[in-house]
Length: 471
Image (cartoon, rainbow, N blue to C red; front, side, top):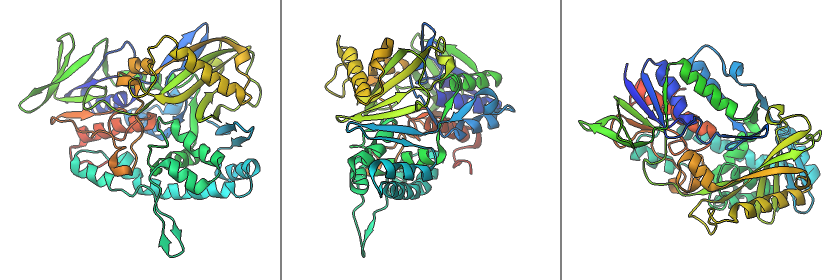
């Protein structure tokens, strides 16, 4: 039995802690904040409840596996998960609306009806090629640990997206997702379906590799899910599992550095000088390695008068004037004071603090951003503005405060292509006995990927450095 200190109480860190405690290690989690969950936050006022981080769950199998491997109760006994169907509604400035069911066959028919004959076939053909990328990269990019430069080089060399043949010649494969969408989907509205989904992962389609199309494929194939009570219910369940396994949590404890002895990790020192000695350190917070670059999100939490109209989609993407606004309206009674009210969360990809022209600390920045999102939603016919009881804006600075990631950057998932520019930090740290988990570690950001980082780090610790993932 080893003494292990886990830095941070985010989802990937808690996943690692539960697995390590199940293997009979003595695990202590030190967290700088006053709660757990990392980016999976919750905000409440007047009986209204909002998720302030991810609003939907992808790859619930990651968390089901955690429950199976760390105890007898299954995840379904702790969290009531429902597949979102229809999967998403898309609305465009020209008045076009596309309601996509969860099943691909139904999606093809819906696209042909809304966008014209052949749109469904083009969409299905692109997702079919994305499936090839998924099958080729799923294991090395998601299920195997990243432990050193040699392996990083192998991942960087993965073919990002297969080139199409034209006659006897093979055409150059598009480098970015935006290029792929424009070239193969042709209709700008159909292309926006692809790029809009990817933006929900914190990725700019103009910069993201073409292989990001696997995210749309995975959503279409494996679905999107919602836990009753909001995403925080998942964080609650993982935290409870950690406690059941004997994990100790220390909140209000900001880790400053990893201690070393005899050339290997030997514990953690807090900002106040307190030391936690350990045989192994698992770092699941910002502050180890180079600060990330990338995009962030601006969110608007709306408390609405009136009940949610029947037939309202859980998720709508509004495409207008170069802006994609995600609108989540779960219709969950646990989120409202009564049946005469509704909640909605609007969000859009924005530059992180210090990485664009907007200073999110400026007096009018939050109000201007809120006005823009609400105007886009109402221009698309959602009719939310007239129902607003009150609203609360969340800027990249709020994300920075919740996660500790400079500028409020939202790390994207690890992706093939563009010379490895979208690979995250290795699961092994600079010192022997130090490991990384969370959105800044392989396999990158997003709830599923962060959860897998915990699986990978725990596997390396429990099984040894030659462990290459579970089959």
